[in-house]
Amino acid sequence: MLGMKYGLHDRLHRVVAAAPPQTTSHEAVLQNFKTKLDLSAEQTDQIAVVLQDYSHYYESLQDQLDDLRSTGLSRILQILQPGQREKFEKMRAELAPQLSSEPKK
Image 1 (cartoon, helix red, strand yellow):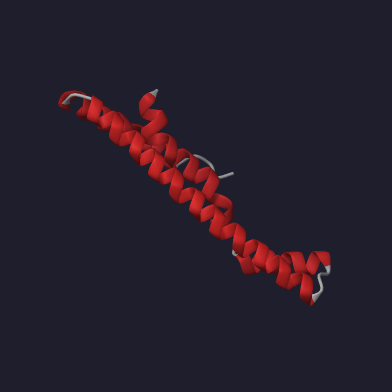
Image 2: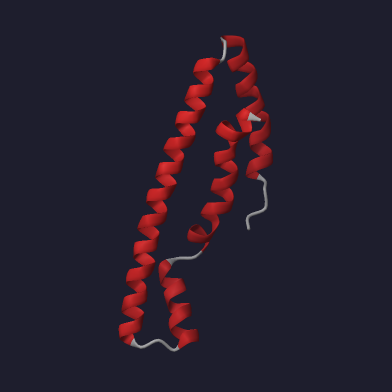
């Protein structure tokens, strides 16, 4: 359970959480908004700024989560004995393919 929480939990959430920003570009989203909402040039410019701000904010949060997960994993590894670390790493490796094959939402 702890291994999932600190060792693999991040991979699961990266697949799910990272999907929207990676699957669409700002330009595509902005163009879609512009076309479907019939935005004026001024509105388009304002929304472009909002999308860019969101992107920077999302990246910052993702970096913070990566640091947090890394710290948790490091702390677990410090607690475990050498033999336990080997087993723990094996458990993580066995679960990794399951997480990487999770359907993207």
